Image 1 (cartoon, rainbow, N blue to C red):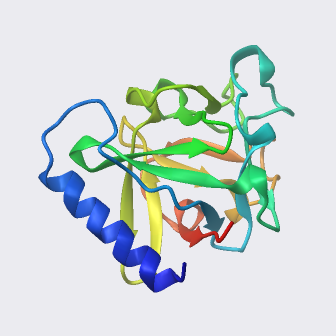
Image 2: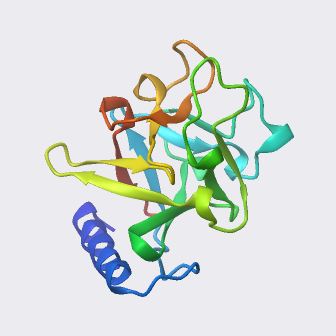
Length: 185
């Protein structure tokens, strides 16, 4: 699938969601696999293809990384369209990305991983708003409580702490931007 066809399919699904009645079950699942690529070319990785959270995570065993330089199974996600214009991301193993507490976590003072990948259903913390910026042709991901997903250093591990993906940004800037890359698996 080329990028133009992917954008048309995504726009059609977004229109279907906008006109649908509100309920918790997914309305349209885009079954085409995709990857999230940061502005400096790294890819979001769901470690082990998902399933990490709680006691399985720690400062050096976080559920999400943003340092992959190539796309593979762990970088493959599926976009699930939900009611009210929200989306969820499902891993290849069937788990959903979760912004703990609905977002607002990250930085060197957070004692827990801001993200888990062990949810089996898209509840409130697994729901995101995908915001498109036509000027840069990129997206930002807003959490349930209004914060943005941040890829520290535009992807890669480093900076003031060892948590590569945060959920505490109050505005979408360069570290919060990414592109959706369709995968032809």
